Length: 583
Image (cartoon, rainbow, N blue to C red; front, side, top):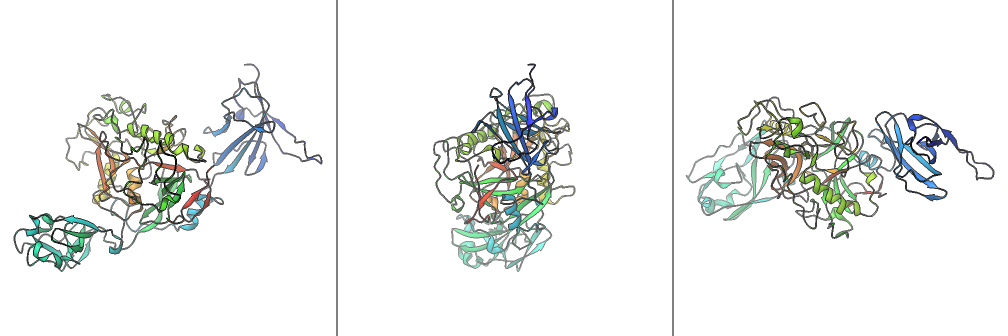
């Protein structure tokens, strides 16, 4: 069309004695124009941190909000203002409405150093002191005192009741491992001496590995991964606590490391002040990203399903149970395959995936098809989250969901003893994915181990195939356009929180209400027959993995709140969680 849309910008609003006349000025900055083929008139007032401005901001460090009216009535024309990478641009979905006045308000985006007033970010900063970790993420489980450790039970069959048991009266650190002290062997079989084991330490929770059928035979009591303190015992079973950290001190803190956006602040250990009540559900704060977004993971779904929109409790953070941390996305269904469509190909490790049987890495991992887990997360968003009163998608930040599809090309890394080739990441070639190297090497303390990272790597072709975002293409790939801003935690994020490969931890905060197997977003390996993705074991909360086709793993959604998110009240405790002001 020849007629261009006229853009008017308020320079300032002078209130006259009549209090009825405002002065609007034509604004003809071509970089901030609407679509040129629209001939309707728009009157634009721009405000930066409450002050009228003749231009839009020149940097991305703002949160923008648009409201439009025709006369005195508010109209919904789908007005949006977004940073394009070089400038702010205003656009509308419905350009057929004329004589519309729009106010665009730019507010400086809160950051950790300047979190604003009344924001969740400000409350977290006020209620926490950033400190160094007591244990290195990925190497040890969260440190603890014996009193912090939950009790578990081991059964003793009639066969092993006839065993003589090796025990110690104490333990000492041996590097990252343990030695039993005051070691001895029971004078009689377990069945006849079990009461003498109370208050002692065993080399294993399995009697078959903690003793011998031969009297006086001593099991190895040095260089142990864990030791097991006996709380009580009967002829058929005993209760115990696992000592898996030689620090012997409680770890519950907020620490920092780098992510894709800058400095991230993450909770670690037995944290008790990171509860959030949002959208009628309870969440735990995992970390603050480098751009100020607050990443959450579900703690209590609160009875909400696509068939039930009535919360089970008005105080969801006070409710505990084994399976409450998992989302019901379709009726009461909360288990899901990671990908049931392309399970026997490297492509199937993707949050989105490309072509099975492809002859290149790029084709296998092209983000063209949604995985099963992505489809089900979106069902939950549509069926449950978006239906909560006051929910507004604008409260969700478009953060990176890191599905690290980069492949390990170092053939010296082969913990599972596969026959490795030289073709990586496509078809049925055997290869590890990078999160595996970070987790396994960190856990073993082996040379060259980098440990977990909150920086999402580029893919093997140097691109952003793994960096899933909805619309952000500056930091992410924008491949989730048309999908919800929800995802899963990465194995690295879980490691920073307190879990580790082959090391139990029943004290860190993510364990709460999640006593079963659940998916992470990080690929593990393709073994020539099937693809595997990392997850968390509900039994001991160490890392586990399974075939992507298996549908017995549970879905635990994560989302990020924008840095400007306001709270109504709260201090983050279970009895007084941060309560989010719904928009």
